[in-house]
Structure formats: structure tokens, C-alpha cells
Image (tube, rainbow over all chains, first blue to last red; front, side, top):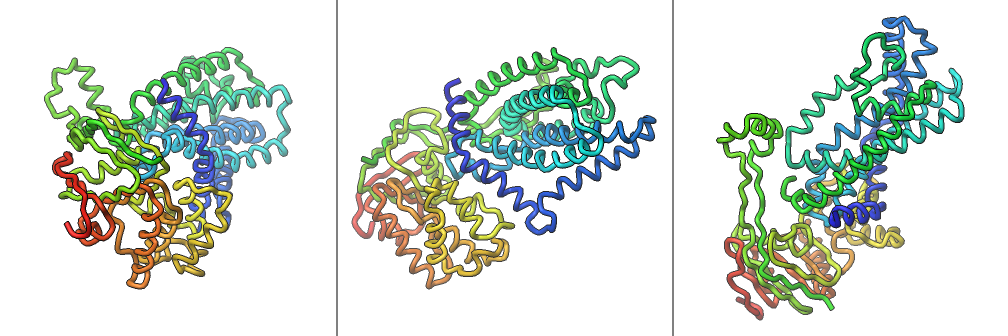
Length: 258
Length: 241
């Protein structure tokens, strides 16, 4: 555990590297465009409006009910799925940095997560606009959602560490995750609410991704499932232990795998 | 006090086979109880370094020589703390600067100036001096107005000048160099050589891998000859060897 803990602590300390690179990457990605990072927001906005129109008519739901639900859902989903699907290639993509600079591995995870957090913050503008139009959630519900966001972060970080190490060793992990992502999109209550389901909802009750997603989103729709918070907090604690142990055992191997 | 001590250091470099790198094949193997695990799913280990004993002290200017694949770059990366030994120990005191592959960490869409900020962080410069650092780099690399243009618009010589200027800006206690000579046009080469001499003078220990006898005999006072991952010769030199 010692090696893993050291790596995580010294990784966090290199904020000069990971935070700067996350911003710098975002800047570089949109270097030659007029809107810059706001392209992220525009893309998500188009997604929200487009999907909102189609699915509100498919499911016979008012647009005014559909849009807030979908805006919040998509913004959380892009963050969550972005971190999960990119993490498996995190160390492989940074292989030249890993082989040339003596940086803690966790720095690379933090860089990836902050990059997605920056996108997430840009996308929050859409949620803001939707709330202004369709009304704000109550203060209590917003706090539950924030608590959910914290637990989501805590979980995504350990997931990212574990996936990066496994992805460096097993090169088809990334492809497997990419293959799973579209189906997970439909198994997560993004386009619908849990209360919309008429049949069995077992696939939601036993789906950790959906639960992780729901603790952020459901409070905003007025549904608070207390147990989900406890379960996901427990998962975070166990997950961090797993991440520490794998990192301790494999940290020195990663440089040879990438 | 700067020093480097290696004791019976071995490094086995794992090379994961194509099948070994497949999670699917691992699962199939577990699922079938390992019966059809006849393919080469095992990881091959290359003995990159074997029983290396080395003690470097202040004043040592070491030239690492040997054929391709003899372990020069591997040894340098062990000295830098990037590779961890599979057996044996390494003890190291003093700050380290490495000149390995130049250009790692550069984003070609960003300006030279912004890339200096990136590299300064990777090289762990004191960021309080970043502005004056950028001025010094601008002066040395003679890139002038190009520093505000994206690096993708640079010629390869200009890129090297920028990278070299950043990498060699500060001296360190221990300097590790892996074949980075011959930078830019002839005018710049003269200054590059002077700069290398400067930081080598200030460094307490220098280890450089090179194939050029000329460079080694003009910069180094010791040579280490490596063959197949072992140190086969270590001697003091003066001028020619």
C-alpha cells in the first residue's frame, strides 16, 4: 500500500503539472477555432435539443419536462463516460512522458480527470440555462445532488487509476469498454426517469453506473434514494483500497508496459 | 554531496506478447481451465541489465559506450529513477536533469511560449522565475517572433533549438545525457556545444551515452563499456582512449 499511497500523494502535489496540462490540452484542442472550448457546450446543447425533441415525441412527454431531465442527464453522462472510456488508454497515451520524466503515475490520471472536469464545467452552462427557463430545483435537492457529485468524483478517480493500469497491461480493455458504453447509455436513466419504467427495473437496481449517475441526477428530479448514497460511498472506499493495492503492486511495471 | 551507487543491480525488462496483452484471451484461458493455453501467452523477459556495480562520485564525467542494445539507455533511465531495478539497489543523492528524447510533452498546436511553460513544469523549474526563463530561452534559441507562433510552424531545426534551450537552461547536480548532439545549423551548434560545456562544468556528475569517440574523449574522464547488459570495462581516460 505504501508505494501506491506515495504515488497518489506526490501525484496530487504536482498540481503545477496536471492542472496546467489539463487547461493547456483544452486550449490546444480548440486552438484554431472561434468558439474555443465553448464548442463543447455547443455540441452538448445541440445534443440536448435534438435528443429532447425526438425522445419527447417518441415517449409522449412534454418538452418542458423532457429538456431539464435530459440536459442534466447528458451533462453528467458525458463526464462519467468520458473519464471511464478514456482512462484505459491514459498511461498508454502518455507513454513518452512516463518514459522520459520521473512523474508520479497519478499525475496522469488527475490530468485526464481535470480535462473532463473542465468540459463538465463548460457544459454546466446548459444546465444553468435550462434551470433559468424551467425553474430551479429546491435547495435541499441541489445539496443532495452536490453530495452525489462528490461521491461520483471519489469513485471516478479510483476507477480511472484501476482502468489505466489494466489498460496498460491489457490492450483490448479499451475496445471492450468502448463496446459497452453505448448499451450503458440506455441502461442508465438519461432519456427517462426511473419512475417512467413500467416493467422490471432490476437492470437499474443492480447497475453501479446507473446508481452512480442517479445519485447526482435523481435529486434534481425530486427522487432521493438514501441507500444509493451509502452503497456508492462504500464502493468508493473499497475501490480506493483496490486502487491503492494495484498501484502499489504494479506502479514500477507500468513504465515497461506502455 | 552528490553520488550514485549501484549494487548488484539487475533489470529484467518484461515484453508482453501480443496474446499476453489480450484480456479476452486471458479470460478464455481462465474460463477453459487453462487447457488451451498453448500459445505464447507468457511474458518474455529481456535481461536488460545484469549485476551492475557502480559508484560515481563528484567530478566523474562518464562516457557510456557500447553497441545498440547493450543497455546504455536502460542504465541512464535507471539512474534517472524512471526504471526500477528488478534486483539490487540504487542510491542517489543530488538533483537530476535528463537530456533524453527532446520534445516529449510539447503540443504542436500551442505557441513556443506556452510550450516553454509546459516543459518548465515537466523539468520542475521554479515557476516564480518563469518570465525571466522565457526571456533567456528566447535569447538563446534566437527564435524571436516565432515564439508566439504555434510550434507546428517551426522547422525541425528551430524546434530542436527551442527544446535544447529549455532542457539546458539550468544546471543540476547530476546530468544524464542520451545522444543529443548536433542541434541546429552550424552557428547554433557552436553555442550548443558551449552551453553543454557550461552545464557539464556545473554538474557534479555527468553520465552521457554516445557513439562518438570524439565527443566522449573531449567531455569525459571515465568510460564505461557495456556489453549485453553488463559493465565490461570501466577506466579512467585522459583525452584519447
